Length: 233
Length: 191
View 1 (spheres, chains in turn blue, brown):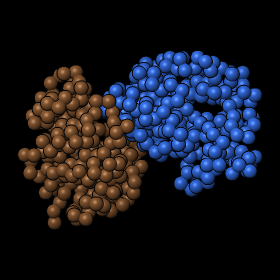
View 2: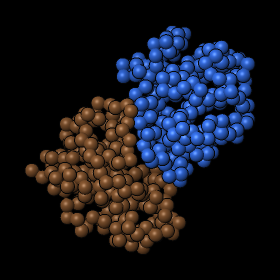
View 3: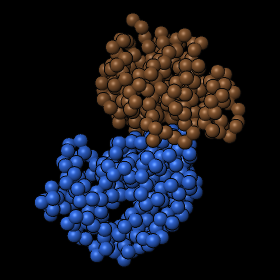
View 4: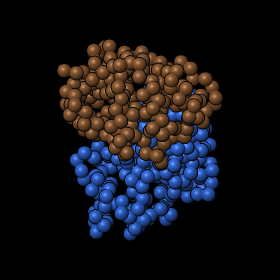
């Protein structure tokens, strides 16, 4: 089991419910939902070649329970999809990691509101997870939040630090340093959480070096939004 | 032409694992000198139980003083900001024609994320310390082929472990040099 992996996708705000999906700027709830579902799907696509779907765990806001799309319920075992209310999500978060096999030490945490992770990045991270030392890999967003981490020796203390809603990089690093991991802060990722992020997302995905950030199918879904909100670009 | 190796790190504190690896590389690579380069760490990013740059440097000086082929450079500490290796290498190239850039195996894994990796290969020989416990990795970027990988003796020791032992008032004899140990204890570091 030493090489077994578990990938936790944690989405604290509703994204499937078109009525209650978190939104920003001039975005309609429906299009915000499309945006965030696309970001989540992109992460699924990224990890699917490396990790069995049985090792995916999805933690969602309970508002989304009735709104899950068939593409998701068919691709993930229902026992791996969990829900919590906005009030209890933070406190229930550490228990989420107890759902995995206790022998599985290699864990990914993904708050999928970002782009900027490529298959090469994932390979690089997989290599670091092979090191003998206890390794913790962090990726922060342009807003200084840690939306991604991976470790080869998961300990519950990490969940206690991560559960804080604003998993801010520098302050978390100080707390994490007490856990004696070799910490690697790799290239930043780009989260889409503010109105100003949307035109930046367009610029970022237009650059050749970022073509690997998503598949053509995902890119087409983003393009639909770029056309819909072209006045913002 | 003088052949030098440059060995960067936090060195908080430098321990015998670093020294043994450096001595081994000195011999295997037939170097005239190895220069230890402690890196600058932003004060707000310093880990719990870490020491100041002045203490790290002093412990380093004490630890290498009897090995005449070991030297140190304060180049990165003087910058007072986090340095990129390429900037340090460019500076040292003004003095030295031949440079082995010594890095750990973990750094090779992330080497393609470093600033100007191709230029680092142009200016130096990238020499990777691979310990016996480091497994062959699965996904290799182009720099794997270009780097010189050297099997170095493995001492299961880390600066984190030493700091942790000091904080628990446990002995650190044989893990750091005698003078380094005295310095750490006399200055109440890592408590």
